[in-house]
Image (spheres, rainbow, N blue to C red):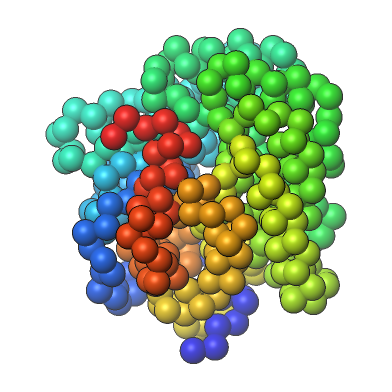
Amino acid sequence: MQLRRRAFLTTASASAIANSVLAAEEPIIEPDLPIIDPHHHMWDRPGATSAFSHFLLPDLLEQLNTGHKIIATVFIEAGSMYRADGPAELRSLGETEFATGQAAMSASGAYGPIKAVAGIVGNVDLQLGARAGEIMEMHMRIAGARFKGIRYNYAHTDVPMPGRGMNPKPAHLLADPIFRQGFAQLAPHGLSYDGTGYDPQLPELVDLARGFPETTIVLNHASMPFMMGFNPRPRADVFKTWARDMRLLATCANVNVKLGGFGLPGPPAAAGDPKPGAADLAALWKPYIETSIDAFGVDRCMFESNYPSDAPVCSYRTIWNVFKTIAAKATPTEKAALFGGTAKRVYRLDI
């Protein structure tokens, strides 16, 4: 089936999202393959109209129990449940408190054997410089051993992207001396760095990784190469540049890559666009995933659901079928790394 680029949503009505998720499901591929999902979110947004404005532990577990063998997950910050008052730089502590509570519910065993939120990646403003270290310690006191790292996005682009904020962060943030003072606090505290930026920013991440070889870096969503849907340059040219820069980044041994989040960018879907199945999405995503694995190796790559952010594209069970389709020819050892081993190592999970 020929898929049009506009079938991948960034904005959608609640009914469109629900229809995507409730579409006829395909049989589970390799149901006994253990999976650690290293990238999902949770939130509750009263008053929002999205079908996924409410996504708490019971909602997450509903997805985790749809047929794949999910054994554990890692929660990634999403700007949810911040404290309503107090100093601005401390408000993100509220999200860590929230995630820790959800993790405690899962750890009780009352909700089943899956170790949901076995790891927590929170948010600290690295533009605070050296002061960021003190706030990292506050998050660690709240979450204890579950607290694994910090995500602080650096996304900036001059390409117009309807429906998305163009410049949530200033240009060349990764080179900023004050930011780097904050970044320097990660390794001494035993924390990793999750970063989300656009593919043209890959050379900037290379420079950061080379400057801090002792800091474990996790590139989210393979640097979102599907943002090329907004790029006026030919897609083949953009892919070529992205692939070149990913190979350069792979020379930095401290960098790991999350493979997923490809459903995030793109114009709104048109009414009547076909709902993609696992084979359709596998064909579309395979060049990016295989290029990443070829560059970094399976021991530095991990599949991620990015749920519920990717829910407009397909269901949770379909996302994992996509990855299993792409990895069909991998050896059992390679699959073990891609579907869980890398995540366990990077996030120091006691599973």
